[in-house]
Length: 142
Image 1 (cartoon, rainbow, N blue to C red):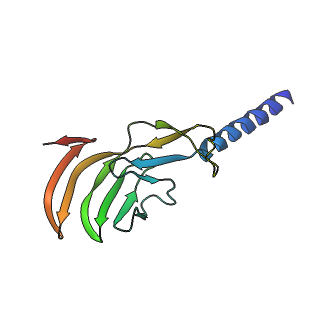
Image 2 (image 1 turned 90 degrees about the vertical axis):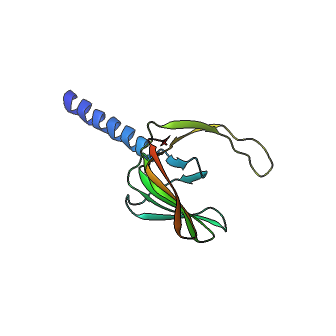
Image 3 (image 1 turned 90 degrees about the horizontal axis):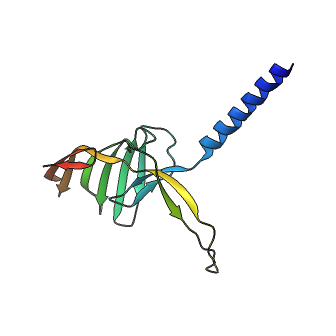
């Protein structure tokens, strides 16, 4: 009876720990554009992100660490496209908050992934390729 109780308790603790882990908010941050994607419902689906009245992004995220494809549009015109490889590690930053009265809230640590440009990136002007740049895990290859 004691062994069964310990096993059930162990399973309960493991399940509880796994549940907390899955509820943590980990996001993908595209540093070059200051774009953050907080949730991906289904990997491989197209996500449209409107940054401003002039700037839009179309993203296809393949993995939770950031492996993805990105297209950047200005005024409805495609200006840049390329792939990202997974982030090498989880990054962290401190984030503070203020309420409506300007009072500071507690600092919290936000975990995020920052994918790396990888492969051939194309820059467009008026629908034509004007630049082709190759990256290897975020490093430009001349």
